[in-house]
Each structure stands twice: as C-alpha cells, then as structure tokens.
Image (cartoon, rainbow, N blue to C red; front, side, top):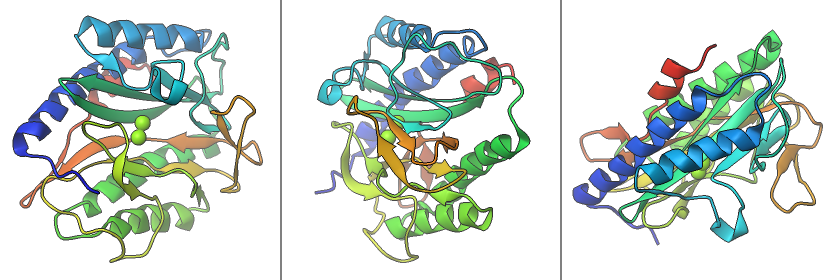
Length: 257
Ligand code: MG
Ligand code: MG
C-alpha cells in the first residue's frame, strides 16, 4: 500500500531532509585521506542528535551505525570501521534522518585524492543518472519511467545497474511502497500521484551488475570487485511540480574535490 502524504507531512519530511543535508555537509568536511570511516559515523550521529533528530539507520533491522559507508567495490550497506581512507578510494556515504515522525534518506559517493579517470566517469554518470531519473519522476508518469531513464543512460556508457536493490517510498517508515528500481520499461509500474514521496537511488557498477553479500549479513559488494557508485535523493511528487527534498549542496560546498 502506498501512503500518500499531505502537504503538511511533506513539509515535515523537508525539515528532516534539511537536517540530513546539513549532516552530510558536516561529514563532507571530514572526508579525506587518512580518516577512519568510523569517525565519519561519529560526526554524523552527533550532528543528527544535536539537532533533535535520530539517525534512521541505527538499529534498523539491527544495523549498527548511523551511516552506511561503502568503499570501492562495496555497493551499499557497508559498516563504518577502523578502515582509513586512502588516495584513489571512492566512498559512498548513505544517511537517513528521523525527525518529527518522518524519515529522509540521501547518499553521495566521493572520490578521495587521485581516482582513475574511468572511476571518476562512473561517479559522474551515476550522479547524472539520478537527475535524469528525477526528471521523469513527475505527476502522471509511472515508476518504470524513472528506472528506464537511469538504465538507458548508464548502460549506453557501458555501466551496469544493480537489480537486487532499489529505491523506495518513505515517510513514517524508512522503507515503504512502492519499490523504485533503477531499471525498467517506460510506462510500466505504479502511477506517480500527488503526495508520493520516494527515494531514487541508482547503484551503478563499472563491471558486472552481479553482487554478493558478505558474511556479516549486510555488506553488499560487486561480484567482480570492481567499483560501484551510489547517489540518492528523497523527492516529493505534486500535481504541478516535483520537489527534491534532500540536498547535496552542503557536500559540494564543504568537500575539497
Ligand atoms: Mg539511503
Ligand atoms: Mg534509500
């Protein structure tokens, strides 16, 4: 069942998303070579709690941390750890905030130092595919239009789309209906209606689309251990417009590219 939000509820999600955007900015200041990924998690959790909110992921189905931190071949759901970022890594930081009864969710993949041009191109294409997906996320279109736009764009560049993990509705729950795949047929799937709030989150691989789950029960990595990128926004559909509720603005202001 899809929960359609009132405009007032969307406003509350926007407030949650504002804390999330600024949490990402606080994290971005610390993302650099030599930093332990557990330190980034600490920054995020403190920032979120200092703003009267709760990290959505911590405790979700037993997940141990505020952030999912996924380095290089890890697609999503990696744990923050004692690992220190090194030159040439890419790091995906996924964060969720729960505030006034509503969740928001967004992710960004950073390059650390000198990253091979082929990997930087993967990051740029994945980010571009997110916005192409958002362009299709308009009233009267269907969920399949979003995935079709993402898939067509990235596959034309020789990349592959992870199938097993998808975007999602969200609101009072972190994951709600509908699923929002990053692949699909034009004109297929649920109709996009006023009050739908969804997270669009392409997970795009440099090599094979196949993934493997590590024995920890969470970490998802590429089967061929080639890099994977992930960008995510939470958006709201209105009859006359689509609003991107989350922002990467503070990341791009604070991270030293
Ligand atoms: Mg997320
Ligand atoms: Mg999500």
